[in-house]
Amino acid sequence: MEEATKIFNNYYSNFDSSLDGVSRKYDHTFRVVEYAEKIAKSLNFSNEDYELALKCALYHDIARFKQWSEYNTFEDALSFDHGDEGKRILKELGIDDEIILLSTRVHNKISVPKEFDERTKVFCDITRDADKLDNLCIKFPKLDKDYEVPEEAIKSVLNKEMVKNNEKYDDNNLFHILREIAFIFDLNFKESFRIIKEDGCLERRLNLLKEANLKDFDKISEVINKFVEERLSE
Image 1 (cartoon, helix red, strand yellow):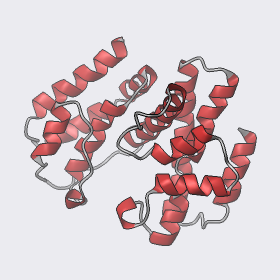
Image 2: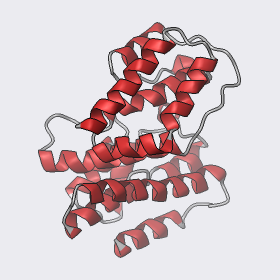
Image 3: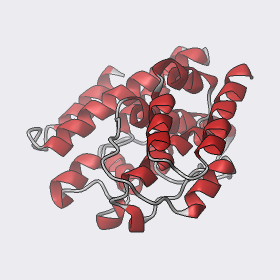
Image 4: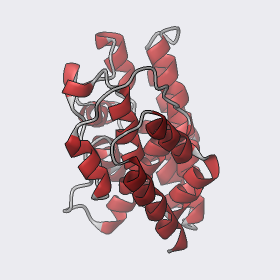
């Protein structure tokens, strides 16, 4: 892990750390590593697999520094797919571990490709869980306006599905709060659910939906809380 961190920091040094987006993604990266560490420990990994899980987390957002520096955005639709670009950057840096490359490429996709073997999928899932945990537990949105939420987003949550991003609702923070809550339907490990339960991040977000008088709030709250409890009891 020491060598991997050196490679990462050397690459990071090419960017202006005084830029808010660059420094925020640096901090995000190492929080994701910490979440990946907790998940890996819960799985009783060998030392080798434990380090591999941390390396996957370390490199997952490596393209974000270039993205912010060149486009001043983290919107892939306005720049490039940061998962795909991350894989390309890692290959340029001499990283040839296929699991690291694949976990970087798919960490931001809607799902892990079904053709991946089980071992590869586990490390991809750890990276994806750790990334979502940081978004859920660290970033806390504010409800500053009343918005309508699209019916399809509410239906996705009630069906226990991820809510697809929609450029039409980019400035609709109520939509994004609901979308982030639905991250839980893509979490893969009991430790991930233990972390969000302990943190209370879902409860805080649900309270915002309640405050906004979101349609079908009671049903949404019931589905979310029941899903978490079921995963914790497995």
